[in-house]
Length: 248
Image 1 (cartoon, helix red, strand yellow):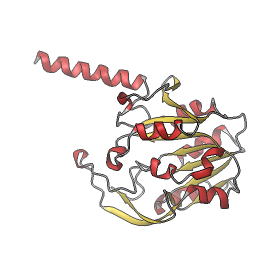
Image 2 (image 1 turned 90 degrees about the vertical axis):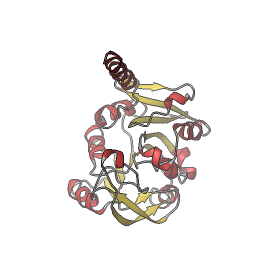
Image 3 (image 1 turned 135 degrees about the vertical axis):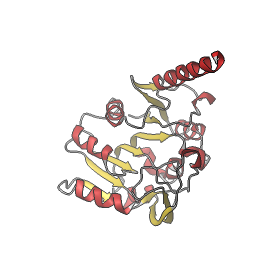
Image 4 (image 1 turned 60 degrees about the vertical axis):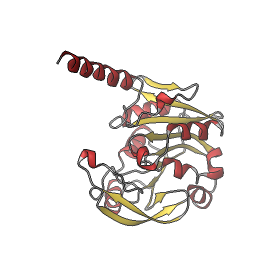
């Protein structure tokens, strides 16, 4: 009994310490995320891209903070697309793209536990241990981001790209191509969904470092720069990171 209690207490201390470092702190922190991002943006950013918008909470907070910014939203789930159209119906500076972002343009299958779920992914995730099954599926269009940047954005510089696509962030990044050199900040999520896609924080670390970006973790106290990769960073609970161009 004493040993069990001690283990439980130590586990609570471990989770609290991790949270203070930003590890696992990131599922309900949109305002804090944008506060951290804003440190690396110009006073009046011109273009923000929200990839994996769901119902648009992130883009809504971006609009609240930057009333004149141009926002490009990517969302593959039809039920969420309808909600986004209604939510931003009167905002001419919001552009909705009804597609997922992936390494290549084409089509793919979107899996979810329920329609419009924030857990929806291009992978059929295994979450039986949470009592969650992914039995809802639909065919969706996929877009390679470099193509969109060239054709629709006309190769313009981008101030911020937010990536929250349930484990497929690295696949999407591989399709950024030359667009990445014109992006000031990339915010990306890392967590349990990366178990399903077999991607690791190490993949993101080297991807960005080799392309001239500095990497930060968003914490309750603001962003902290990660000077080097540590295996202890492989914590599969929702955590938000920033990759900031050295040119920013």
